[in-house]
Length: 154
Image 1 (cartoon, one colour):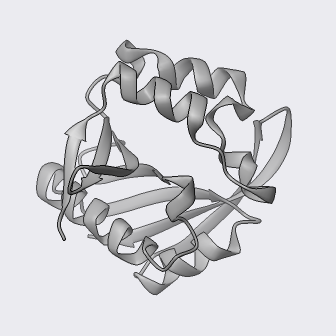
Image 2 (cartoon, one colour):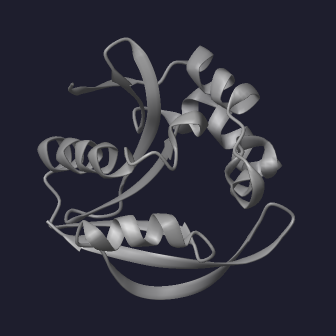
Image 3 (tube, rainbow, N blue to C red):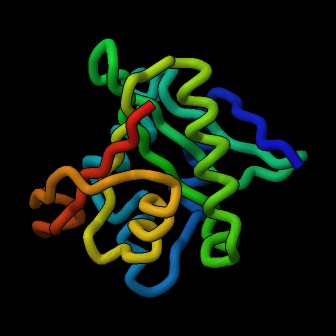
């Protein structure tokens, strides 16, 4: 079944913020884990045209953000619906997002950043061709955390 991308509505952003809850260490990705990130996510002007809901049939399965960094680079952020994670669907979901980025933004490279503890996601990204380009520490969720920046040549 194909994935369909639709500009995220305020109602959808609110639903994600209030109801999408990840288990264990992955609760790090709950939208309300960081007040600044939450405020930005819920601000329709800051989301502008860069956030998209992803559907398979009529079911919302996740979301993407696409940030045009420069003429050649698009930085993506993504979140899969919590009850779908860890079920072998990540590869198809990521491929759909990469295809969307390539056809809509025509980047030379695609970048993303992931929390260093998230080995499951890092392995997925590597399997689809992303390479680690740097590590950095970011203040978020009430602390300082290690992140990995990865890139994929278009």
